[in-house]
Image (tube, rainbow, N blue to C red; front, side, top):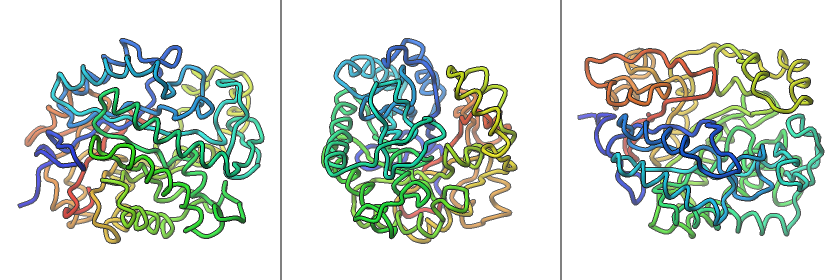
Length: 387
């Protein structure tokens, strides 16, 4: 008998009341790099709406890893506000996850006053700078930063830690041959390009122990020819399973500075981005490069499913699927193996109450927020099909 998406699910040491997760999406509610009442209420609403877990978007593990000055970075001063947030989510019966990452070469140097870093010294069109190539001291320091951030997150009451290894952030930059052109132990073969990701995840797993679930948000491919390809993405998934450092993998794709719409699909929201982008220089850059940078990819349901099936065939880890999940019926025509595990439509993250609304006999509408990156996603058991 296939599992229902509304039945409890296990993610490492924690049990979720159901298998729907509010994905990490940009909130813009952290003035001064700290939690606000608006952010708490934002996630409380999703918890009250019935999701199994809600995810606080990108929190940098170091000051230098921020993409803008008001972004949360993990430090003792941030813990009290984060604790208020997790308490509010727990009071509604949901679990709370936090996304931990470092922006690497597209961090904003004005946010921290520090020079940006990355796998290789090459021009970053996002940061409008030439990042410094990481040295041995950087690898040691950042590995410790991830572990420290994990400890702080657990102190703040988070049930799960999502380590961002996708979308062109630092760990993804190491996986991608586009940004990783090193010739030492950290570059070249996929084994070398995955070395830093594996090192970070082992350090986070050691820091978390059994106090929280640990999973990686992993690019399956970057969505452009010079980037990470699906064969290497599958191989990284195998490596992480072999390491035993993660309780699950969240499968994604796209590279922020090269193929952002590969992740979001549909018509590029250029006008909205120009309205909210604070930097005049970046607005100018977007205007002249939008057509090339923001190639349009047509929207279709479960658009990461074909690549996710490749990963499902290679590993037994629990998988989390995102990207255009609006209902099970069309999946059945495309992939009987996957649809056998789910029978009802997924919730739409645009509506905090849609998890409870999307029950048997209550069809879900297409996610109206796909242009802004607010995506639904489902979890799967280790023995189940890709979901």
